[in-house]
Image (cartoon, rainbow, N blue to C red; front, side, top):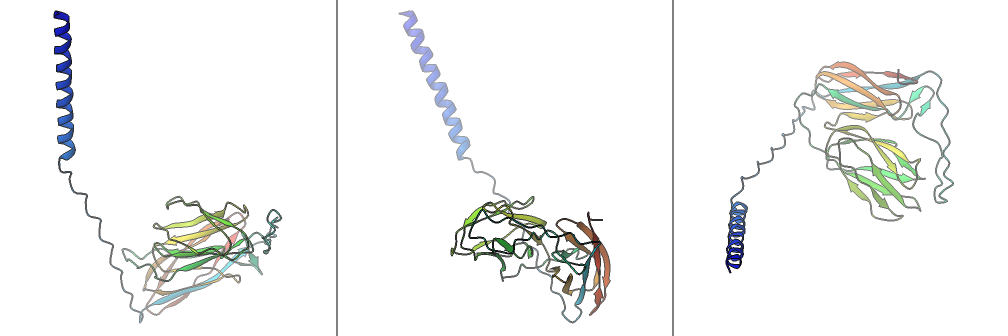
Length: 261
């Protein structure tokens, strides 16, 4: 009898202890949590007086014998009927294409609104067009598929969100944007391993990509001292300092050697 009574008393004690713990937990969960801090307001865009805006332009050259473009084997997919040459180094008459040129430093704390107009990235002939693209952070990239085959767009960034999305023939455009600055962000197609391109995400509108003749132009710069960066996917980066006055026009040329020297 004594043993039975002890067991009952022990059971009641355990029950009361659990009830008290549950009550404490409930009380803690209903306590008001501190409010999350308000997000910082986005900086206001700084207007530029068009009457004082300057421009920078120039030509990028390849110093040395141009490498022969590698041939791409597209035979795995009969729907791929594009120009089967790699675009990692494109040289014509000594002029270097696909160099991303942008104002790397000198704008201080100026802020700029992302353009409302989208930029287009097309897939045609089982290659990306363009091979090198510039876009502002937050600006929409409109991705099209003009091929009779499915593509799989897969950016592999370091500082932005990675995603991987299929796009069948005749499907709707895919619209994406990138939140943070990142230079030479690689994009590939998981369906076609030779398909590669680069998106450059910057915080200002002062950028360009060299054309087949190696030329570029950056307009609308406020007067100031700047660092201009020339970036190539294989040959690396070259920087130059330049000062522009009001309504100034400066020529800033650059050259690259094999191996990025």
